[in-house]
Structures are given as structure tokens and as C-alpha cells.
Amino acid sequence: MEENSKIDLIRLYTEKIEFHKKGMKFPHLIITQQNENGLIKKLGNIIQYNTNNKRTREQVVSQNLKLINLS
Image: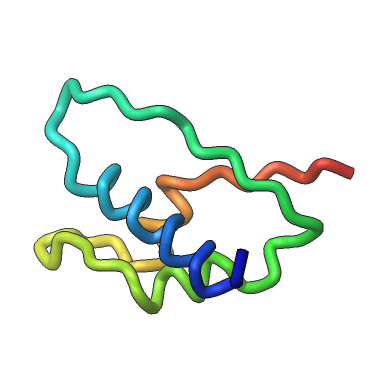
């Protein structure tokens, strides 16, 4: 799968979580890769989020995704 397609899928998931209604359940998304490789910054540049929020775009992404080192 192309990197742009992967990033777009993760973006859609992150936006869905960000705008969910309280009490709604979502499955956790697990992504494996060797290193973070700027993923949070890339997603932070393209996600849509609540502009009334006091968090930055990168903070929104970091809050909704967990990075786990598999090595």
C-alpha cells in the first residue's frame, strides 16, 4: 500500500475518534513500523479538528494514537 493511502486511512480514523460522541466505542488501531518517521507531524498537517480546541493538531494526533516500539 502506498504511504499516502496509509496516511489517509490513519487520518480518517483519527478524525472519527476526535469527533465521536461521548459514550461511543471505537476499536483501537494498531500500526506497526520500524520508527515513527514523522508520522505524527504528517498527520498533524492534514487532519481536521475542532477549532475551539486548545490543543494543537499534533497534540490531537498524539492523544488519539499510541506509538509502541516493537524492538
